[in-house]
Length: 122
Image (cartoon, rainbow, N blue to C red; front, top):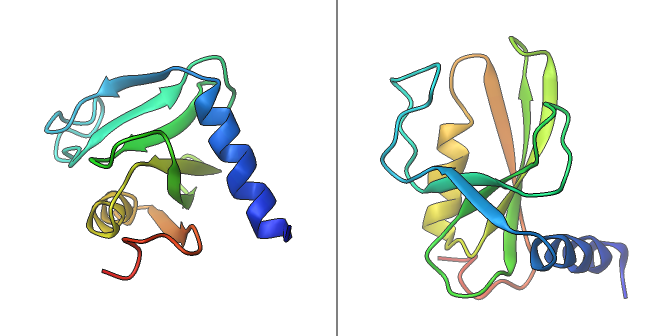
């Protein structure tokens, strides 16, 4: 098993053993920046921790199951932080939508697609 495989196995385990709480449903506006509308369900993993004091952030896509299909690494200079967002059950198009949301204003994101995802090349 290579190191990349271990990362994906462990994030799947984290998702499998946590409840996904959707606190920003698709179509809702960001609470502090109403011009930002969520293109998919967005939330966090209950019982986990992240740099912002909340749970690990999650985008929930349309594919069935709880497999992590990608991750977005973000940096936000106005908040002076960096985070990882897990994309659960996301198609390639949904991954691009989520990434676009994180590439605005003082924030930038980098998409890391899980190797060998059937939908990753579309």
